[in-house]
Image 1: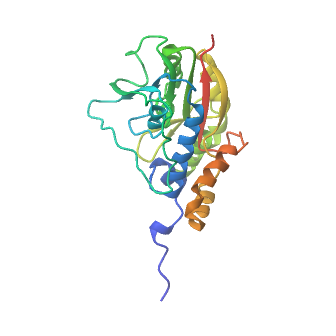
Image 2: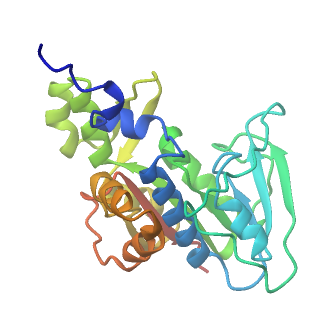
Image 3: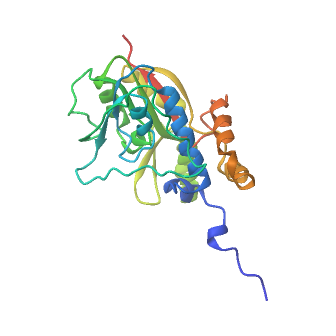
Length: 272
């Protein structure tokens, strides 16, 4: 009798399956969000500030900002959106530090995260546009202009977008070969996802252009993660206690090539 085929659950996941649905319980995504929280912790202002969070209700970096003493306004897409408690996993995600000063306030406001008409100009010390929110807003230029408008002079924004690496992987997965051949040179790369949504993917140069055209200055830009999915999952399978070391390796990584990571993060500032 011939051996049965490999069960679907044990087969390697395609790029589309891996990144179109973020299984937060998987080893890689536990690592990914631990890295994201470490990055936002390092990015946060050193003094208590007023921050606007556009990153969706369940973005796991927001509690860190509140615990660090910052007042955060999180924009919700609708009144029915439930605020979900972040998962607490053993050795799965970095713990939220105990505040050395009083915790900030966390307020929720219903509004459109693409056009911030609910807020006056020069209102916020910082804007957090993580969790791919600007890739889901296909008119990213208009969203960036709005971010610049609500920032105070000297205010900063942290943004996260899908990279061309992810876009090309998704195109190949769906057999869009003619589109794939033009993807690296496209001025605007829009990619269909398996769930029917559309994402806008960027190179570092394209994201820099969107930032500067909005009147903001780029502080830095880099891949969110350099370590591959296979590397992370292999190391955690060997030693489940190695999560902290993996995150520290990622934070120390000097690699800045945007053709490495599936997501790009950038810090920008509104000049005086």
